[in-house]
Image (cartoon, rainbow, N blue to C red; front, side, top):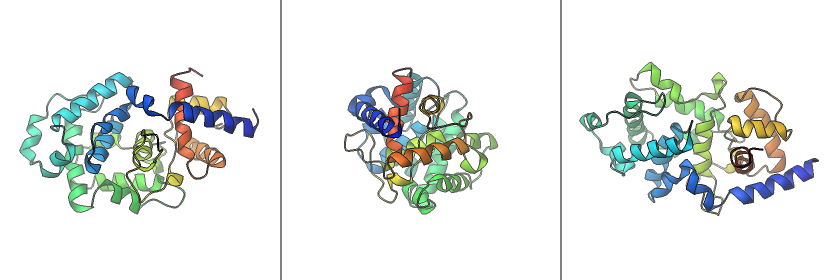
Amino acid sequence: MNKTELKEFLDEKVIQYNNPKFIESDPIQIPHQFSLKEDIEIAAFLTSTIAWGNRKMIINNAKKMMDLLGNSPYDFVLNHKSYHLDNIEHFVHRTFNTADFKYFITALQHIYKNYNGLESVFSKNAISNSTQPAITAFKQLFFEIPHLERTKKHVSDPLKGSAAKRINMFLRWMVRNDTTGVDFGIWNNLSPAQLSCPLDVHSGNVARKLGLLTRKQNDAKALTELDKNLRKMDKNDPVKYDFALFGLGVFEKF
């Protein structure tokens, strides 16, 4: 395919997958259970944090997270006392365990009480064509209160070479207003033009087959390369092609 044909092909795949049917089998269904902005963004952040591995397991464990927060994540995060965390036991998703979950709740409370919430933190440190510096700054702030060293591995850092797939997915959910009801578009202080594609094994393999990516590792350098090529096709909403790359990889075994 030439460049025009490739864009037409991927635009068609975006339309195919960026629709409400996508929600049924995707972890994004968890934040879709809520209507309050802060509930949505906290549910989305926690869900995206554990979004690796089997998708059914991700969804089931994200539901358990919400249950443990009384299905009112913002109220729990904002108003909980330390003793409320004693009721959270035996939560495990792969290497993310109860201690990690408790810290995330504590750190989120710190952010909402002292930094005006997640949107404020991420939008403050983004630059005109990238949210990657914002992710690095977010991690520093997220762990500025006492924490277990092991928990830090659950928040990626682009400056240390990570593609930060899960946080980029979270930001896509929050920032893109796709008009189809999949991504939420509830953050107004960031633009879709600043977003990066959530790069994982599926989207990476498809991108390589389509000539959008040459680097073999799915790391920060690969993300920069992929972003550059996706922006050539749509500078205002490059991350919409995540639906095409992911759909081709997961659903079509492209």
